Amino acid sequence: MKRLSILICAVALGFFAMGQTPKPVKNVIVMIPDGTSIGVYSAARWYKFYTQNNGSLNIDPFVSGTVTTFSSNAPIGDSAPTGSAYATGILQQSGNIAIHPEVSKNDLYPVDPERQFQPAATILEASKIEKGKAVGLVVTCEFPHATPADFSAHYYDRGNYNAIAPQIAYQNLDVMFGGGTGILTDDIKQHFADNGTTLIRDDKNALLNYQGNGKIWALFGKKALPYDIDRNPEKIPSLSEMTGKALEVLSKNENGFFLMVEGSQVDWAAHANDPIAIITEFLAFDEAVGKVMDFAKQNGETAVVVLSDHGNSGFTIGSSRCPGYDKLSIDKLFSAVTKYKLSANGLESILVNTKPANIKSEFKKYTDIDLTDEEVETLLSSKNYKESDYTKVGSSENMVRHIVDILVSRTCFGFTTGGHTGEEVLLSSYHPQGDILKGHVMNIDVNKYLQQVSGLDKPLSELTDQLFAKHTDVFAGMKVSIDKTNPSFPILKVTKGKNTLEIKAFSSVAKLNGKPLDLRSVAVYIDKNDTFYLPKDLSNKL
Image (cartoon, rainbow, N blue to C red):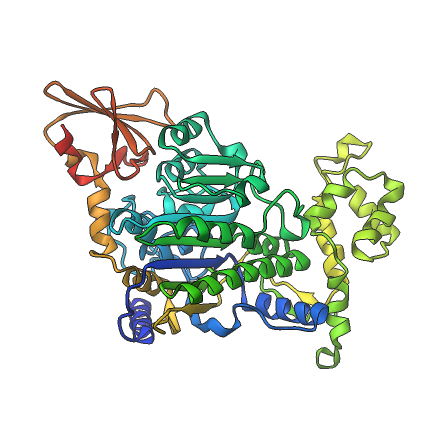
């Protein structure tokens, strides 16, 4: 009870930091450099200073505070619940995508047991349904990954792409740019054909030259895009380029738009402890920040919030490998990393196709590192190296891990973990009238601010109850059954008189007497309680 009181008090302080109610604006943009700790800002700044003699970042003029980000039952968050807190205002457990959590003995905040598993309406859904705004997502991960899903889907398990990918497709987004061509199903492609969505796959020129007025998806790679440092700029757009095109497309809506942009793979590089990938991924994100802030200032009707969803890896400038920290020159700290021309992933893709005799020269070519014989042997013993002794493949360690160890050993960077960390994250804000989010706030405060600047007519909690009522309540007194012939996509069947309604899980298109019916919202099925969550007024269609 004591810790709960402390938390509630902290939340109250967060509200105080927000100041007066901000003025609503036409356009709202949320930018998330996933898994970015403050050490990343510092390293990216010094790297830029060392390589360009300019240590300024596009985000600098807009830094306005810090955010405590956490799950409903844990101080250290996972991207699913932390991003979902920004999107919905509801604290959630690890793995949860925009859904009310189950009760836990470790809850840090009151959890309503009556609402567990109920999808929670997102700021993206409210912008589209309540305000008639265009909505979009721009990411460098595959499109059903945690953060984009946080704003556009609902499920208790972030890894269930079968449940998440179709929901995102059936949200009828105006813009979806990112990775994941291999995740598209025939059903999703058919839905795009039915609703007039332009689908672009692995064609940068087609995306950047797009001049249409309809909905557009552009995906690159079977899953995620490569790290920016490994990216072929002739074939794959940068995050900044995708963001610029998204702004162009979304701006055509006279009601305005909501856009979420994620620098998805700062987090992945931090998990890998790959310093050059961390730095260059953040700089690619910062380039997108510059594009967004230029747009917002010129547009005059746009608010922007930039913040990470959690820290990662305890990344530091300084390590026990480099004593005399206060006397280390900038050359000692940054010379080595500036010579790395690929990420560890990029190096792996080359080394797995390199003859053992050429490993040293290839490694030197991309890193300026002279490998020792022992390091070469370690690389050759990696489980995914095409070694002659197949019996060692399954028992040896991953090559990326070994490459990272070598890269880091030549630097003075430190890491405490390969996982997430619990420190506060930096907050940056822009509002045309100066009504920015500032000071120290909690993650759920961020959502309250987004609701306010979006000018929503009702709180998200009310929209939640309108869009996601239990099917047993919606169709009380009617004949109802659930067809689980395909367990991944059950079908709810409702009969009233001569009318029959069929609703497929994770779709927004039902069939009323065999004819398509737009539900306005995705139908979410939760197997844990065998329940469909649907618009409350759907029974009126029968």
